[in-house]
Each structure stands twice: as structure tokens, then as C-alpha cells.
Amino acid sequence: MMFDILIKSGFVIDGTGAPGSVQDVGIIGDRIEAIGDLAGAEAKQTIFAAGKVVCPGFIDVHVHSELTMLGGIDRFAPLQMGVTTQLASPDGFSWAPMTEAKLKEQAAYLHVFYEDEGIETDGDMSIEKLLSRYRGQLPSNLALQVPHGSIRVEVMGWENREASEDELGRMELMVREWMEAGALAFCTGLEYEPMRRANLHELVRLSKVTAEYGGIYVAHQRGYAEKVEIGCSETFAIAEQANIPVHISHFTVDDAAAAQIDSALTRDIRVTFDMYPYPAGCTHLLMGLPEVLQLGSPQHVMEQIRKKSVREAYADQLQKAFPADRVRFAAVGSAEPTGWEGKSLAQVAEEMNLDLPNAICEILLQTNMQALMIYHWPEERYKFVEQTFKHPLHMISTDGIYVGRRPHPRGYGTYPKVLGEFVRDNKWLSLEQAIYKMSGFPAAAFHIKDRGVLAKEKFADIVIFDPAVVDSPSTFVNPRQEPVGIDCVLVNGHIVIREGAVQPGLHGRVI
Ligand SMILES: [Zn+2]
Image (cartoon, rainbow, N blue to C red):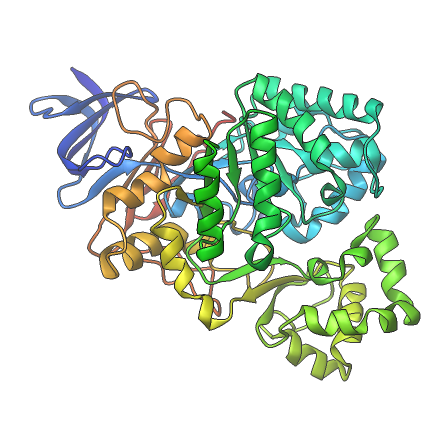
């Protein structure tokens, strides 16, 4: 038999969690044709992988990368970590289907996470128009999710109220349209505007439509950490009322969270979750404002925080909301260079000669609300990274956000860090368990067809890495660093990383 590509003598870990063994992998076109002892087989190209691990390409279920993949300095960062499939619309963020005026508002709100050069905001944006922007331009595969945020903005604007029956009907139609375009899940971000204004009834109605198509419900919950019970009760109520599997985004397992997951399992709720391997979060500064101040359109929020009376009324809450020495600037959008990136909120407030509440409001105004922050956990919570990664329902994601001068290192180092530090050095997980959490498990939970597992007739999305040296040099001070030991990556049967270097050609697909 003549293969296009033959990977010889690697330690094959198939992504199901089963023990690995030395095998050859033969590829024809975009699929795996054979796995086993392929001695004597001929191939147009042969990759010698003795001493290396050969495993499925990694599937990142929560990452803000769909515009990053279209161009710019971080275009290939996910691929260099071994990520071959990424999910779109994390936290319910996207840009379709939207009419022009609403699209412009949504793009302005999301700019802090995407620096949206890739999005054309003149004219309406249909789902098809958005997808055509991606086709032929992707280094790795993009799987779709229904974005609750763009749907609610389009139907109801930034209004703080329940949806009417008529509005629910329009939103259901849009869910249907996305599911028919191939979406795998309904995705929401219940601590972001205007999604947090949705009630349980709305979420159940939209989840029911998703369930008709075999999709799942995915949420950045209304509460984490000390509010985990609030967040989880809502998620589990949706699971039961819409009869749908649920997935919780960026979920840390402490004792209270573990008890929530256990209670879901005793109720036969199908639940999974993802988390990245760093004890620090990252989101916009806006999220730290008292909830009532986040209400309404970005324009309205800016008008509010400009008022002296408002700042005085909420000074106490603003003071308490931020552990100002543990919060650092990742990015300030396209504002004039401020020199703030990398500094703590406390430092910048001091430089501005303002108390914390006034500094926060001024920073939001000066950056046009484009301040993206890294929130370092208090040290006593560090131990929960290990507890999270050892939980059997946990899968690995990056939550990468590719903007600014000091982005969170999770977008550049997640997978090699887990394989090097957590697997090889700390021995928290076996290689087989870690790879399952990166490939087979996400593919199963999100119903991604023919990917995430190495087997005959599956797509040839493959990573070859050196388990003795794999690691990430990315740090919070110097995040944009290439991984070590990720030697070779294939996407749809094409070699896209060879000896750690990006090869020409864009072989990702909208799947
Ligand atoms: Zn989120």
C-alpha cells in the first residue's frame, strides 16, 4: 500500500485514555488509513517518530481565537501548541446574525477581547457572511457554537428585561439557523451584557431548540467560587428542563464546586467542564463594576461612570471589588500607549494620583472600556489547579485571549505546560489521561465527528511531541514564547508544523 504520509515507530496514544504502544500510522488524503505494524509499506513522505509520542490533535473548547486565526502575530500560536480544532463563540460572543447598527455596538463591546480587525462592520452580518470570512483562511479547524450574546443584542439590544414571547420566538429561529449551519452547542456568558439579563425560561427555551439538533448547553455561569452554587443550580436546572447535556466553561474544582458536580451526577445530569492550567483569570475591567453599573450599552455605561454622584454612591463597592495588587493590565485596546500593560491596578492608581474607585472609572473612560486584566488568584487557592486537573469530568482548554502587549500566557503555553509540568514533572496525570482530556474527551462531549481519536478512517489531525522535553517557556512577564518539544503537527492530513516551525499553507476547515 502507498501512503501519502507514514509516521514510523512513534509511541501512539490514541486519545481514548487507553494505554499507548509503539505503532506506525499511515495517512492517505485527509484521513488515517492504517495504524499498526506497517513495515514494508511505502509512502511519499515518511516521518520517523521513535522516542516521540504520536497523538490526536488537541481540541480547545474555550478560546477567543476565531479572529486571531485570520492574521496577525498570534495567528499560529494555537497550532504551535498542537491545537488542531478550536470552538467558536466562547462566552456567547460572536457577530452574527446582526444588522449593521447592532453589529457595530457588539463589535465595540467585544473589541477588548478580539481587537476585531478581521470583522467587517459595514453592512449586515449574516451567519453565511461570517463563515465565508473563515473559509480558506484557517490554520486549524473551527467548530461552531450558537452565540447567545449576538442573538440577544440583535433581538433586544442591551435592554435589562425579560424577553417577550415574540422575542423568544425570534431568538429560537436564530438558534435554529446556527444549528443548521453546523453548530454543536448553545453557548452563553451569563456574567456579560446583555446575556446576564436572560432568565431561566429564556435559557431553557433556547436550549430546547439546541437539543432538537443533538447539541449541548455551554455556559460561563452566573457564578463561580463563592457563588458557585448559584451558577451550578441554574446550569443543572437547564439540563433537566431542556433535557440537554451541559458543559461549564473555565470551572475550578474546590470543595464546594466538587460537591456541586457530585450532586448533578446523583441527579443523572450529563455534565462536563473545562479549565486551563494557571492560577489566574483574565477578563475585562468592566466585569468588576457593580452589576447595576454594567447595565446597558457600552455608551450608557460610560455616561454613568463619568458622573461624580455615581462614583461616590458606589465608591465602597468599587474599593472592595478589586484586590488591586493582584490585578494586572494585559491590554488597553487601541488606546494611546499608556505604559500600563504589566503593571498592577494599584500601581496605576498611584501613578494617576487617584483613589481606587476614581482610578477604575478613569481607566475605563480613557481606554474606551478596552482594559483587559489578569486576575491572579490568592495563594491559598493555588492548590485547586491540581484538584481540578485530577477531576475525571475535567477537560483542558486555554481560554486564550490574543490581544495586547502582556496577554495571559494560557494562550501560548497551556498544552505543553500540562504535558511537561503536570504530567512529566508533577505526575498528577498519566500521558494517556492528559491526552484524553485534550482530544478524545472534548470530541465526545461536544459531539465532534471523526476527530479527537487516532483510528482508521478518522481525520488525520495529529501531534508528534517529545515527552522528555515538552514544556512551555511562556510566563506572565513574557507570554509570547513558542513551546518546546512540539515537533510536528498535522491538520487534515497536511504537515503544518515541522521541527517546531510553521509550514506554508492554511489547511483548517469550518467543521
Ligand atoms: Zn468566560
